[in-house]
Amino acid sequence: MPDEFIEYVMELFGPFGTATARRMFGGHGVFLDGLMFAIVSDDTLYLKADEMNRIEFEQAGCEMFGYARKGKRATLGFFRAPEDAMESSELMLPWARSAYAAALRANARKQVAGQQAARKIAPSKPAPTKSAARPAKAAARRPAKKIPRRAAHK
Image 1: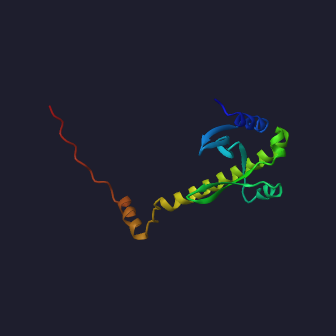
Image 2: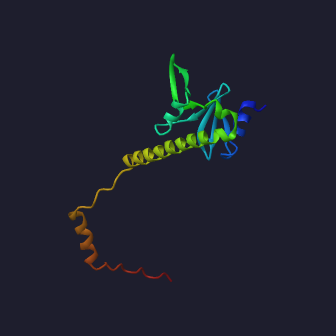
Image 3: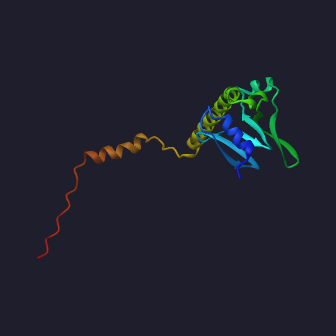
């Protein structure tokens, strides 16, 4: 049976795009074009934030998503959606855009980090030395050896 709050959140995001919700970590991740930009936990919507949009959430008085992990409080880069934004799709739209932009930036950073890691792992070919290049040039100047043909069998 679908969760009514998840259905409501999907309606709120309707004008923004076709978002999907997937069960994760005892709640739901909300995705658009394969990027998670929101979390639903205990009937509360949290939106992705980073250094570029965090101030917007802090100024709106939104609390950061957190959970207990090994006896300590762990936090993620998600903030509770503002109460007024939960009232309509129109009010949610700028917050959804901001959260999705943060997800795009995070994805771009991951891709760059992955490319840098791949460069460190991939073996690089050393440049040929002059002494290594000379035999190849000399071999190119020598005429090819003639290989005798085998006699045809009758």
